[in-house]
Length: 449
Image (cartoon, rainbow, N blue to C red; front, side):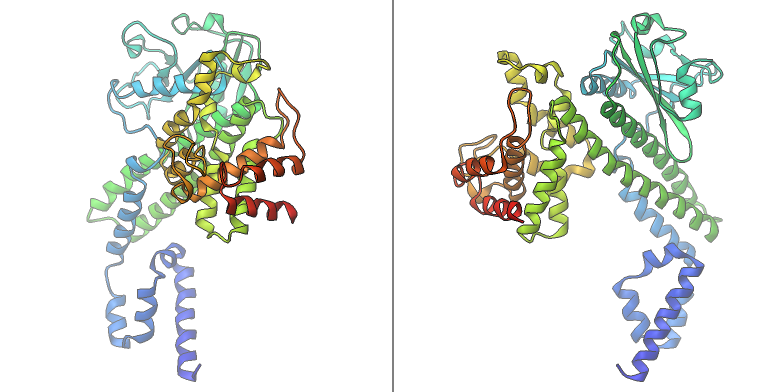
């Protein structure tokens, strides 16, 4: 490197440090190849002119880009409702939750700030969704709470903590709450505020499994973070349109917006892990089958020298390959004898249920093909489409082997775990028919190490 080149490099680095001290996020958005080339090769006069460009306009463009990525259609949320007809979807969510965690009833409440179109002056928490079948319009019953009501629902909302009890102090007859013998209230809150609660009710004296509580807790956090993100996006959109918005206002909003986006990403990853754990609990695995499958799939990816992004997607697909089981009744997995024909049909179709769930979680959309085809067979005799050999996505072929090996080496209610040698021997014999020989060889190498 010549002296002149070295001085240019020092100058560029010094400018980067100054920029970081002045506006840290600006460096993240601005540091691209175009800027690098410009700062190295343009004249000082031209650089000075470029430096005078409107920073306000640049900030607005950055915020517009963030908004386009994290708009209502691109985040995990059921938000933006303004009329009671829209809120019916919350009934579907509540019904899905009772299937997922084996409770008898689920009710979802939002605070009146977020329950747009359902505002009532006499209620602070408003019922927006329930698994209970109502005669007529659920919202005409005006069910909810004043924030100063002394009960576990309001306490959970105010204190942002999960509360369990054996009954409700003031049961609502319309919600059949006089039959409740166990209740768990989970707040919908983010780092900044509370937006509502999810109430889980059982008509039997049974404590809700910890993994199920964790799953609904992270779902509640996803909803609340998404709600806050959408409110922030509305605020940002309004400020972008104003001519008198200052640079400091835009920088502040950008910092808040990127922080919320970071929180959403963190919650999404935690959600995947808790969902996988809940599947294992329902499937009666004594160890974390989904986690073992995902870890093994990632080791196979490493053995095959796959890139990091592909390996990560296959890892998530491994975690969720049995996702459909989360909506099946737990009694199916408790049986040690022969399943009924109806139960067997439910088990056979569970991957399709899982695909439907994943379709509504679009941050996981790229793993869908890997899960959808992981029951295909290498010789073309599998399901759902009879794909053969290389026509089956590589991720699906890897998950299939990892899932089978993990299941064989895990205790189940109806059999003891096989040894690693026994499981490998079975998989070797089916290499080329059920399994991709290349993936089987990679599995053997992983287990040797």
